[in-house]
Length: 138
Image (cartoon, rainbow, N blue to C red; front, side, top):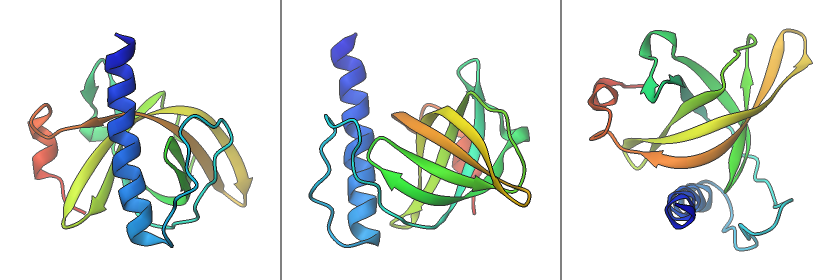
């Protein structure tokens, strides 16, 4: 079980590192074993789909704007507070949408009507596991 969880996390970190290196200067200082790893400021729109009972809640999906990334998670700026425990993050990369499951670690007000949602990544999700994700575009 521990090896399976570690492998899923390594898949997430591999994808995110590839994404970050494509959008910023090469990131070589990332070390997944560090607790306080470097964050990279990349601002992009992401699709956020609440995830409950092991299913995406497509009727509750919304968009956010990323503030910064690390290989273990992201912070997303929202225009209203969204109380989610787990969320699927849709990321456009190389003409595809990639999906990452994340757990909310904080939701904080940051200014006039905006909120910052901190997410910790846990695994990559595949459209073959959730065919309803195949029809989503943004």
